[in-house]
Length: 142
Image (tube, rainbow, N blue to C red):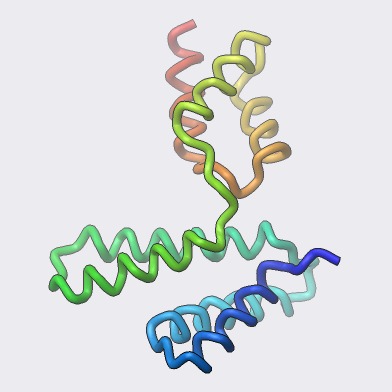
């Protein structure tokens, strides 16, 4: 059976606590608590839900890093972001997204179809805003 992402995070959290890796243990503990709470909401829970939570955590780290914060805090948030990103599936590059969008646009697909294609075939592997921006620019040039 496939190990769910939430179980992997829980396992890694316990390992980090045993190894006394405080930063990693605290981050994964908070992440796991958020995932666990959502998994008990009564709705079916999937890795896609876990990925959304991880991306939300990454976004928070990026927003904090954009602030004028001390160097030691920058180091901490950069490390947190690196840890979180290690749980995401490999992300499509901007060039890969552009190539797929170009092909879909040439097939006559519109925004709704293209976004559905990415959701169905590349779930968790792309940034929706990036895809949307690329599609808009391609469709406005046709």
